[in-house]
Structures are given as structure tokens and as C-alpha cells.
Length: 126
Image 1 (cartoon, helix red, strand yellow):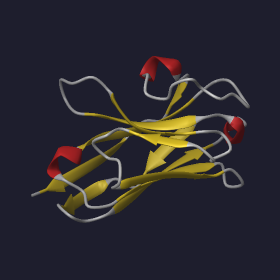
Image 2 (tube, rainbow, N blue to C red; image 1 turned 180 degrees about the horizontal axis):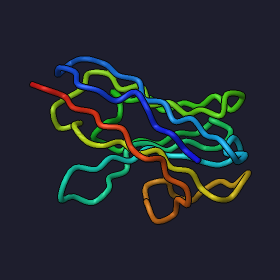
Image 3 (tube, one colour; image 1 turned 60 degrees about the vertical axis):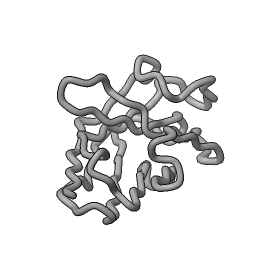
Image 4 (cartoon, one colour; image 1 turned 135 degrees about the vertical axis):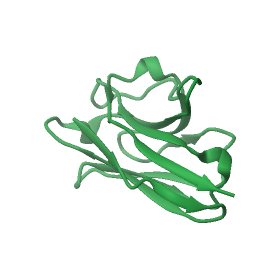
């Protein structure tokens, strides 16, 4: 089970840190990612991280502003979001691959992820 938290209402230029806490399974050895979704649109890839945390990848729209990280000892993944923009407004979801000790060939396809958190809403006002 994945539990996302940390969303809220902020102003443009502010920062937020999202957390994704895992429980009930050894998610510490699974690659993970963050996606976001706005009404009427497909779920959009934001960032992905390998199970060791040594590799990360970002969508062009957030690269340089967002940082994905993980603490496997705490079974928790994070998304540090800086310099937020109104277009970052969305429900953010964390997700994990089913395979353990597995290096994905891609991180940006939602259909590749097996487990999903419930989402946390981020609203950025201008």
C-alpha cells in the first residue's frame, strides 16, 4: 500500500515536499515514480527513481525544479517541488513497480506500474 501526502495550496514560486509512504510490502526494492493528473487529462509522468535511488529521471516540464528521492530505511519516497507554477496544479500520485531489484527500461509509462497511492492535491495560485 502506498500513501501520498504533503499536498496543499501554495502561491507561484513557493515550494512543497510530497511524501509517499509504503507499507505492507517490501517496496524498498522496487523502482518508483510520481505522476500527476488534472481533470479531463491523462495521467502525466513527473519523475522516476530506481530502487537503489542512484538513478532518477524527470519530465522536461519539471526538470531543474523538482527532485525525487527515497529513503529505503523509512520505506518512503519524496518529491521536492521548488519554484511551483500554476500549471503544476494537479493531483499527484506515487506509484511502484511490482518487480523487486528490477531496473526499468522506462519510467514514464503509467501502465508499467502495479501499485498506486491515492493521490494528493497540489494547487498553485498565481
